[in-house]
Image (cartoon, rainbow, N blue to C red; front, side, top):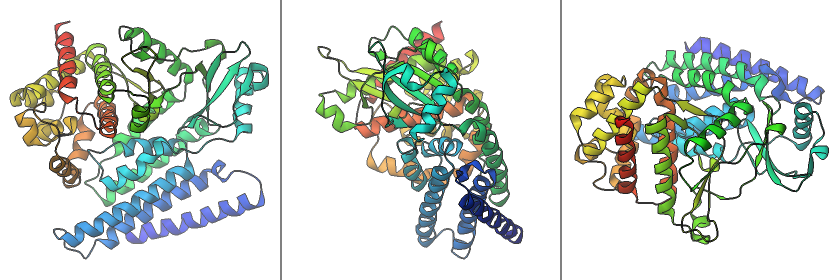
Length: 466
């Protein structure tokens, strides 16, 4: 295995060097060459794999020295993956963002390093942005907009957003897909699949093929901005009873699969505690509103916005209002839950809130986790098994419990991988969504868990009674 991998590394190094020679002789972007992108991915995978195999091979696994050195290898490897994602962009950043949210699965060295991808994705140069607008809408940006700001408001894995002013004076947000991401995504996913199979051969306890399967299913949907527009309108209609929720209105006459023009709405990111204090926003009301909104989505309607990272959830305090508004952006990634799954998930959360261990076992097993239901309960709640037994609404997470949870993520990595490979695919995005929402609560230092569980419980009762 070692010799064959070394031969592969040598081959890819040569191919990458050849790609660099071609790039040097022409003004092309080296990311246009599949061999360069493949080369980076294979080299990074090989280097990370060998770092673990060689660095840890002669150290007793049960020793403190092993744990200390393993942490250093984690940190080096996470940095290499971050560099790979930033270099290859597009699909790699999307998958890297997902990994950065998997706090129940990956060591903190990985999640803390990769989480920056939510806010530091590379942007596309303005000439390329304007070219896509002209290709998609049939007119130059100068003919469509009275003003088009050159600097993007933000860049993400698949697109970036610019503020613009229509000819009639209305301010809009213009989301433009990165020019090559659609073309490159199929090859990128194929390479990831091959490399993850190689990693599984070397480390059989690691099962990450579910990550590739999810990317295969979800990326085509996220790359279709008309699908995103339909999701936004469906969500706005579905939860219109919440006066605090704002979803930007779509300009259908200026939207295509690669360009989306929508109402421009201002607000601060949901994890920006300084912004909340500066604008006298009650952070507990923010997390309570998010809890109500997502409980309604998950338990009542089974139609869930699955990318609530802070850049997609803005907060605004309207003058004269006592309560903050929640602005929900980026509607490309949704999970539709079957009625059977949704009801079992409702019953499971009712059991978790009531500390009903028989119910926790019964409904966890109905969701496909078998005898791993204690681990599953801990992953869902981000609490220790002792806290689950006592009742997750009895006390907030202590510093000691948080440390125990982080330590257990590394200890139970093989079991967590096995569990993720066995649960219904609907569960994977819900787990990611849970983690992203918890990240917002952690950043805001909120302690409204009891009220959140009350909202959740009410939604579960309504859902079961329907």
